[in-house]
Figure 1: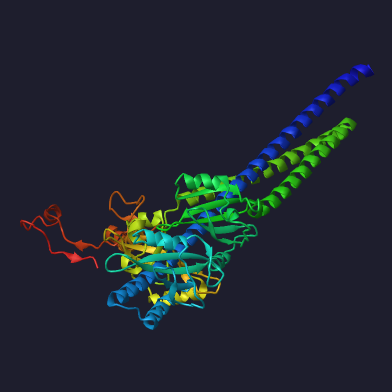
Figure 2: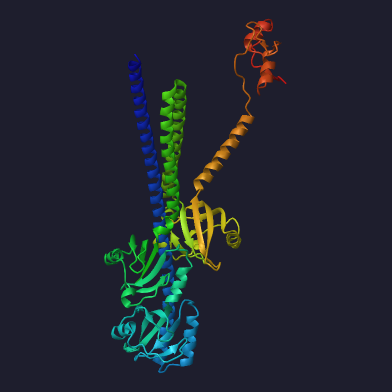
Length: 557
């Protein structure tokens, strides 16, 4: 008998044990899966944000360098015209020419110098001529001497013979009246100047940004690197080389820089109109540090949860073997455990949904976003702005946003700029005109962009078209007002009214009987006038024998 009793009990215990083990394993696998999905998605989102960040960095410096080179070229053209004018007159006035060069040199703070060399390569005129220098062997001089190139020529990065600094030379050809070669005018920007600009941006510990020419030679890099040979100066990763050779204008890729062997996510941009390439990179080891901490904490919690669930399951089985009461208690605790697992699962699912929703909202944004410099010249124009105003990016870049949109401000523009400079932002409603001449109202937010010295570089402006919303609000308010006026003039009778079948008197709520005209007058806006119909007149006054028509009426009041 005892043996027969123990066999079902053992079988039941084994069944419960298998059920619990299977349940705990499945729950742990499910939680591991959710944690894995969450960590994977958060990493993908983080890497995506940092790819966008490298793209923005490269774009900003492309615009900055293009603007700097453009200003340099304007100065070189002015000096070139002045030299050719003096050559045409028969002789060069050195003092007058140097003063002219100095004036245009001061307009471009990034310039190291502006100088003029004759047909033999001797540098005769310019700024900071501390010693005699000949540049006849420089690549840009040779190119301009041997080619009738009327454009801007870029030299290779070299060590200046005047200052000893590594510089980038850009030059234009001087031409005599007969078209023959008369020398060159050239300007220099030091690598230190570029590196200083790069250093003002927070690139994290292992971030980097470099400026190269189309032959892959580094003109400037931050952090600065000392190159032992010219081969090191031209050293690039295979991925970068492949993208450059493919003719791409810009691209984002992952690679290790050969000299420091640090893996980075890079974005390169070819500088528009100039043979220069910007390459910005951020190291995943830096921007993923926070993610790794979060992953470590989640894994530790997961291990603690798994260990706890296993210990708890073993205790449940041991107590179930002892007595029925322990079994019930363990079952209750197991339910609590499952509830905790479900709550954790729901929390993780909500987190994942929230991340997905935020990503979708970013993709669906249609607000107009533009960047303008302190002179209101448009430097950036997104697709939302094209949708809102009708102008394409190519049509508006470089134009004055105030003139383009014919903006009407709620207060003076100076007050708006002062508010933005004091607080970092300004918000309000603006009235503007689209490309098709349609007036719109936008909810506008301005944010300031300053350099490290606190000088204003421009404004980030986000505009949302609220024209239809304002029209709908005004229409709704008008309808509500009309309805309220109409309701104020309405007073109605409704429901069942008790009326005498004989005398036609009406009983009120207090049980009193009232004449029908008194009741209607007290419960509505109607008024009575009294007369007598022809039938009643013949019945009441048969002896008169008159043709009764309408009687004079008397107001019930």
